[in-house]
Length: 256
Image (tube, rainbow, N blue to C red):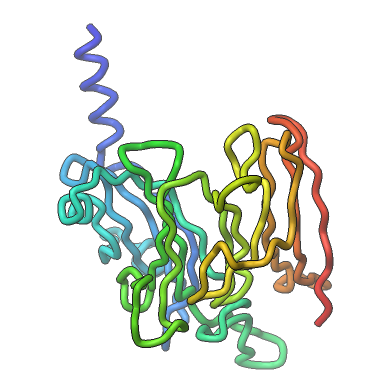
């Protein structure tokens, strides 16, 4: 029956025997062990928890997880039915606060170092396509306050509900497409322009650095770091989604 099928599928989706898929967000201070993050849902956490572990623990028979963000608790606290829509990390190579890149332990055996310190979380209200953008600090494991009065350099990036596209250009600058008024969105309802938004300033005052056509689906801009590969470089990439199936990309190699 439909009820039996539903219960069987739900049991499989909530099983603790599922393989927890992880993302690497740097290396543990001191040990150099990989820091692995996973978003997990089960019967106790229907909205999900974002948690972390090390590679050593992940490979053991009994992985020890540490909760970074409890979405069920956040939804209850803020009285909003939050749904997880992923995150965009601040690359270590673009972060002055991270021990980014590779730190050689010898001339022939480089060891990776540093950790991702900030991410942009995308949370949707009840599963909507549009999301809220909120900056999260992985060192303190708290949201970065967008209304901090201490100084503009302490203010977190945050935007209300919208079909926003954002990535870090540096620790204090975002490349962001958002609804900032007339002409900023395509006829499909996605960003038509990309702005270079500096921390502590108004997004409406941020300069436009790339734009597509109003009839495009969307446009975006981001940095892609290939310097960990032999002969690799840092690339600035711009893209226009001309249609659902066709896109145009522009790439510029950054000089050292």
